[in-house]
Image (cartoon, rainbow, N blue to C red):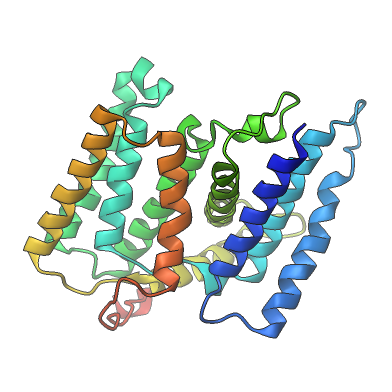
Length: 290
C-alpha cells in the first residue's frame, strides 16, 4: 500500500469538494465538509461477515462514504448547470471512451443503442427540441449516465488499483491528485443516478418514493439551460471536439488515463468559475405547464 498515493488521492477529493462550491461556499458549508470527513471514517468499520480486514479496501470506502455524504449535503449547490453544448461535448467524450472499451470492442452490437442515444443528443444540439420538461429531465439524466459510464470504464480509473492495491506504485503525483478530483465528481453524480431509481426504501411506500423521484427530476430540469445558440457555433464546437479527440487517439499525445480524469476534474471547476459565460436560462417547463 502506497500511503503517499492515497494521501494525494484524498487531497484531490477534498480540493474538488471545495471547488464545486466556488462562489457559494459559506462557513456553514465548511463545517458540513468537515462533518462529511468525520462521517467518512465509517468506511473503516469492518463488515459483519468480514473475516480478514483489508485496510486498502476500507481506505477506499472512506472516500466512497465521503462522496455519498457530500452528495446528500450539497445536492442543490453542486449539480452542474448544463446546456446542449456541454451535453454535446460530454456525449462525444463518452463515445470516445466507449469505442475503446473492451466490452464494446468484443460485443459490437452493444454500440448500436449507444450510438442512437448519442445521436439524439447531437441532433438536439442543432435542432433544440429540449424546451419541454420531459426532454430537459431526459437530457440531464443522459448527462449523468455518461459520467457514470466514464466512472465504470477502465480508461478513467485504470490507476485506481495502483493507488489502493497492495502493490501500489508512486507513479505521477499529479495523476493521483487529479484522479481524486475526478473520483469525487463521478461518485457524486453516480449517487444522483441511483436516487432516480424508483425503488422504495425501508418503511417507505412506492408512492412516497415516486414523489421523491419527481422532486429530484424537478431539480435536474432546473439545472438544464435551453438558451439558443447559433448553429455555426455548435458546428464549430462539434468539429473542434471531434478533431481533438481523433488527433489524440491517432497521435497518442496524452494518455487517456490522464486526459479523461483531467477533463472530468477541470470542466466542473471552469463551470463554477464561469469561464464559459451564459445568457440567463429560460424558465423551466414543469409538468403543470405542459
